Amino acid sequence: MAAPIPRVRMRGISKRYGTIQTLNDVALDLAPGEVLGLVGDNGAGKSTLSKVLSGAVVPEDGTIEIDGREVRFASPADARAAHVEMVYQDLSLCDTVDVAGNLFLGREPRRRILGVSFLDKRRMRADAVAMLQRLGISVPDITVHVENLSGGQRQSIAIGRAASFDPKVLIMDEPTAALAVAEVEAVLELIRTVSARGVSVILITHRLQDLFLVCDRIQVMYEGRAIAERQIADTNVEEVVDLIVGRKFSARSARNTQAEGVAIS
Image 1 (cartoon, one colour):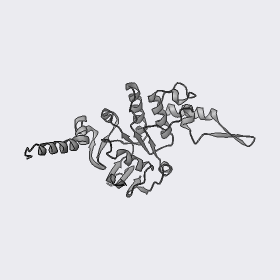
Image 2: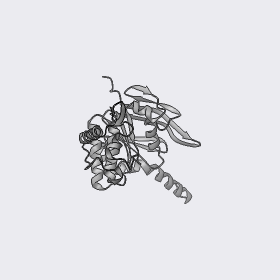
Image 3: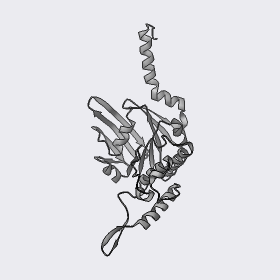
Image 4: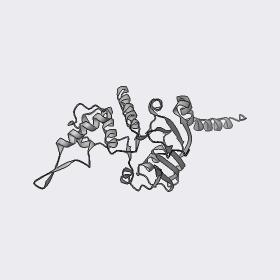
């Protein structure tokens, strides 16, 4: 039986900024409906890799396939056309626009009266309520400006907006950073809801405990390379920490030992 075609297949992805090799021959696979935790220390390359997949960064080398078809992204619009969405850590919400307006920003429904186009606020708000209900997102008032929402509610709106574009792949960069405990759980439940609908999710996070609540698999990056993969059921927080920082700590220990004149077996 032939192996199933992955939702995402990235091979040989490389990116350099001047003398800094940010990504070096990186591979990544993602199955339909899978939640992949992409982890690594600061500067490991995980955000750059996700930006390559979302079209925000163009690699120097490598290939990307979506559902077995090779694609080339020169911009986020190209990635969106291939049903790849990314929610950035800064959320990119308009604080002085209400919830419904943020959900439909740039694609607001309109109606014509005597040949003149007007924003159809009634339809937009009705569609916004339906969209949030489908995703299990609770917002007391969709007419409130998002600047008045909590951090968790703002994150949910950003994820809801990305999910409304009917994505095949949804990338989330630190979605639970700086959230209260109850808000973290709400965002994690939203990830479960989205993946249960068949959307493939890449979760970038420093909150390692979150990996074990929603992820199927993790991929660890170190200095621009993908160095390890683990099924979440086959690992633990201690091993993940060791994979993220162990090589760095080992190298530091080795240098200290040599400096002190102690033999290394």
